Structures are given as C-alpha cells and as structure tokens.
Amino acid sequence: MTEKRQHPRKESNIKVRFDYFEGDPEKVTTNQKPTIQSKGYILNISASGAFMVCNCRVSVQMPVKLYCKINKTKLELTGEIVRTGMIQNNPSEVAQRYAAKKVKGDSYVAIRFNELLPEEILAQV
View (cartoon, rainbow, N blue to C red):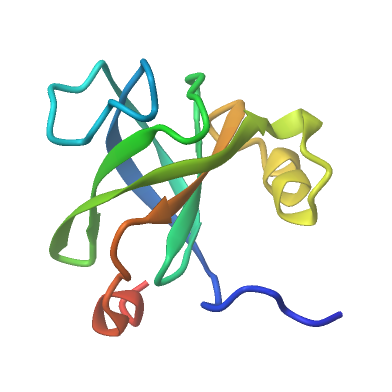
C-alpha cells in the first residue's frame, strides 16, 4: 500500500494539556479565551499533526492549542481538529492497537498543526 501522508508519523506517549473551543468554526480562534481545558496523551506525532487520546468530546474544524514537552523542550502548538470519535468505534489499525493497550482515554482526536513541527524537535521523540 502506498503511504499517502506527506510526513511520517512517530509513535509516542507524550502527556499533553490542551485548550479547545466551542462555537462557530468560522469565528473561533486560538487567540480568544479557551472554552475548555483538558488533558490527554499524544500517541503519534508528525511534522504536520498528531493523534491523541483524551476523555473529552470535541468538534471537527475547531481550533485547538496544545501544551507539551518533548525531552526538555516546552512546546505550544496550534492546529485544527480534523477527525475525532470514540476509540472503540474507530476501525483504523492504529486506533484498535491503542484500544487494545487500554490507553487512558476513550476518545481520539486527530489534529493538523498550523505550522510544521521542526525536524530537530521530532528527532527527540
């Protein structure tokens, strides 16, 4: 099978805090006060996005702001939620693999970053 992704993913288990927003996706930005704050784990990451698990319900097309640390580098990443749902209902191989591991979280969230994560940061994962 041909890989469709432009940037390869790296498996991870990175603790993440994140702010997410509710409302009209056309009007909401990460510059405004967040609606809700939550925590989760980034299970895989690439230069252009991340796949994480959490215990919250979010909406697609909404902005998100992530706060995490890779090694000793603190990161604040912004992006958009492109896919979300319940892990147990996701037929993808990656979601099923994480569901079998009984990760802390029942929902998955796929995020596309607004800016590419630098290669030197990814190399530390």
